[in-house]
Length: 88
Ligand code: C2E
Ligand code: C2E
Ligand code: C2E
Image 1 (cartoon, rainbow, N blue to C red):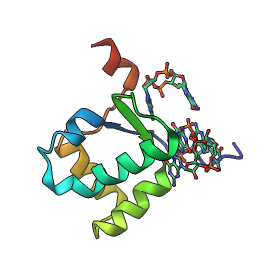
Image 2 (cartoon, protein in one colour):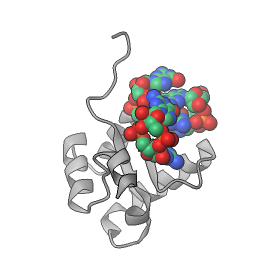
Image 3 (cartoon, rainbow, N blue to C red):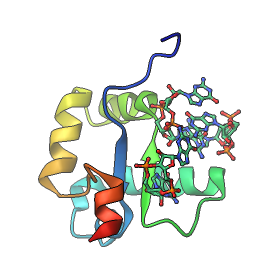
């Protein structure tokens, strides 16, 4: 494939992210709000984000992208399978 696609899409559960339960992730929440604005994507319950943006966020959090993914998973703000998520 000519495109370098990530092995798995990073999909955020916006309700969990914005609920304020995870103060640790305040900067991820601020970032997600900015992305929603740039895309005009306001009504979604989830948001797919770019792999390069996750890398930049990891630099900000002074960790690796893998570690940031783990942190997001610990706070249960990652959606593993969006279609299964909506089927719930
Ligand atoms: P759009 O979704 O309306 O996004 C408009 C502009 O907002 C983008 O222009 C980009 O400058 C910024 N933006 C939106 N989402 C993100 C994001 O997740 N990260 C970053 N860093 N910036 C973001 P751009 O890049 O010229 O893209 C123009 C249009 O091309 C986008 O309009 C979208 O329709 C499409 N597009 C670009 N990359 C992707 C992609 O990876 N997946 C999809 N599905 N569409 C893409
Ligand atoms: P998927 O990627 O598994 O996403 C499933 C559903 O999650 C989407 O259903 C949508 O309701 C939600 N979702 C995922 N990411 C976002 C997001 O960033 N913003 C919002 N508002 N919702 C999101 P939907 O829209 O009916 O799409 C069904 C399937 O169609 C997607 O499954 C994907 O495979 C494909 N698709 C939709 N839009 C795009 C796109 O821009 N680029 C690509 N490559 N595929 C897309
Ligand atoms: P990626 O850059 O890691 O983006 C992952 C997902 O975030 C995209 O899945 C899409 O759901 C969302 N996304 C990223 N940027 C934007 C954006 O600007 N606007 C909107 N509305 N959604 C965005 P998707 O669409 O299945 O794309 C998978 C991969 O394909 C992307 O991974 C990227 O590597 C590549 N790609 C897709 N469209 C474009 C494009 O227009 N320009 C570039 N340079 N790459 C693209």
